Image 1 (cartoon, helix red, strand yellow):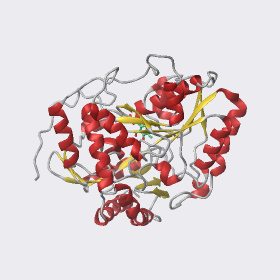
Image 2 (cartoon, protein in one colour):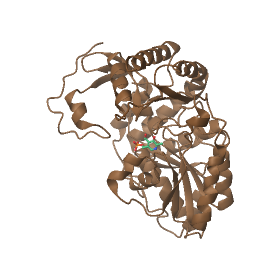
Image 3 (cartoon, rainbow, N blue to C red):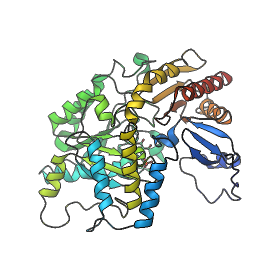
Image 4 (cartoon, rainbow, N blue to C red):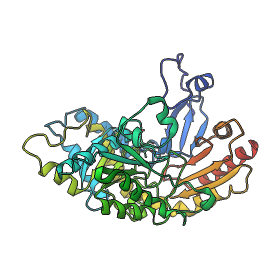
Length: 440
Ligand code: PLP
């Protein structure tokens, strides 16, 4: 089916997010339809999805089971509030998610996005510290190069310069751990690099500086948006130990690593470290309806909820927390993950995907390749005086040749749907290799 979708007459009204609006609107690329591993442009070109949309369509596009669940729920009840009210499907969705999260993280707070999940987790951390009599713990620690969305909390603990510099001072009580990007030690590592566990010890330094005022540390177990930074062996274990030693909560932002992306239901499981909270979004509903969530440890829920006087225990929530359509999509998506063992499929394909990614070593300007699960980062030497130009041109070449990749700075990130097959992998990396050569 090669339908032609009409091109909108007016591209001006939509102020596009995280987009070079002027450049895009001068040569727009419009995706009109999607199915399985592919997008189709408005003029009918097939484009293989090397990025699962935006790291989110983990089960592949247009899954009938999810579509039907949403349609059915829309016909039964479009919306009902969850403030001092409830509807069955939101409870069912929370229970489904809790079955997937590590033991102990059995309570689920629903949001609508990854950004809201990050801010929710940070607020819960502050409320928890107060509830247990540690009200001086007001400080939030992120990490350089971290991405936790665009709310004021997430942006403040985030560590990507351009995301912050337009917006002034942000939250005052925030500090950052050093990032773990160390190509001088770890270039072209397959999986977790051996060097760098000691970088977690910087938390000791922050405790020496800030005393007992730190409430929580938030990190992506594998940093995605900054260009795929795989955690060094032992790093997250060390961070867990230090958080425990200093009475600090550990939050994993699993908006990307959740739902099978690195070969287990959550990155926590694959990497062998259980945090106190996990934030998620994206794959939760296979991106069919916006939804995020925070899985919270029993000790936190109980300190805030059981320990509170009668009345509302946490003054936080969204009109659409547990929205019926999103809940229906989440249940269907979790069921699909189970029925098709999508994390297992990712794990089984990991070796082939890794070999394909590392086959790019030696191509012009490729200075590092990193991977885990079905995520790969290919770092390029940028053109002198023209940062991002090389990667952007490679993006265009790939798209024109029918492959969607993602770029961040001069790093290419690949994260196909977990249903990807070997011929797709060959096609994605073959096309990318040609484009890298062409931009030498
Ligand atoms: N946290 C992480 C780790 C992410 O990768 C993202 C988005 O890519 C977010 C938070 C923000 O999610 P959203 O764009 O749904 O607000």
